Image (tube, rainbow, N blue to C red; front, side, top):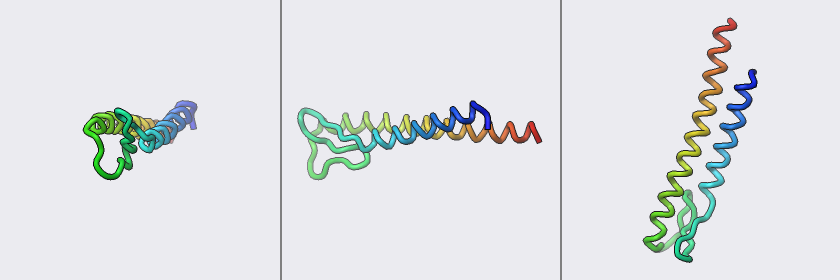
Length: 86
């Protein structure tokens, strides 16, 4: 396994775990608890929560996709390196 693979795997796992942590992190707007991206607050939430939850959802999605791309890049590097060395 190359150093590049190790770096990509560590970065990918860190981004995936960070994205999950951000998804469960509670957000608030104008003093009201909006809940988290993965579990919005129950009942009727203020309209201000919609924007906060949407922006948090976008951030979580971007971080999770970046983590997935790092892991896919690590797999690609490994497959290409194995084929070249075979």
